[in-house]
Length: 320
Image 1: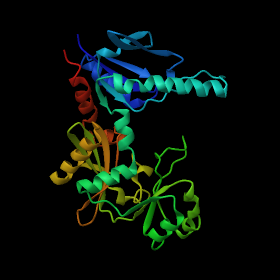
Image 2: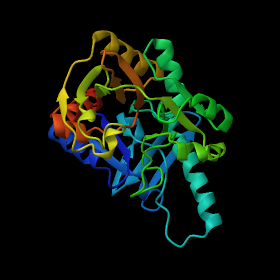
Image 3: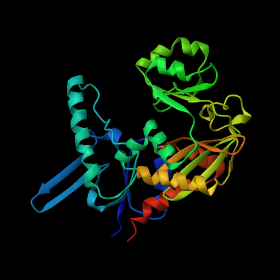
């Protein structure tokens, strides 16, 4: 009997549609568990006794014994399938109880996680990334992460030499509102006291020849050169127009690749999307790794076989 690949996801995560199609083409058993339908439309059960322990989920009419799971694609463990009209106090209690139940999976599911939520959480910390990158030997921009306005003023030696980034994801405010990288201007300096409540990331502006997105799956690195400097709108942050920028395949220097894989091992993650600046003199400057970074857009532009690589990784443990 073949083992199962479990997807812990949401109903409208398009990435999972592609991965499921590729796995089914290989006849790999798989199950999609949408947490925006948990707990209202699916169940999670643990059964323990002196001589046994097992767990299962029931979703979309299918029951899966979690002992049969060999690999897991997971972008988070947040339940959100609560009925409309539930009062605030009851919903708060229900969310707490559901989260506790889900957290049990972190230690009871012995499978390949891509990525394990605890590893994802550690790797998602910008200070932790910079600490690790510096130890490994990456070039990194001079950086200050603080909620101290006085420190921020001292770091910004002159308007225009420093950029600001939020600690949170790009779409932290939801649909239609994005926090892009921006230059710290005189007007921004006048409002710098606002960071007392929202610690921000300040970095010295690094000259760019181009940028690199390196998508790592296991030990495989898929690398694309992003010509962000060809368009004024993407010079500072190419995420403003990710589908409109020129992108070509490149190979990073082997020394940089080795550091990338070392960082992956350090955070114990199997998937990560790395961003680098390449300076006019050819230096690779590490910006960040996103352990939940999207890849379909870069695969669409470059035809890199990232989906197939993820499917290779997920299906390896599911073979008979």
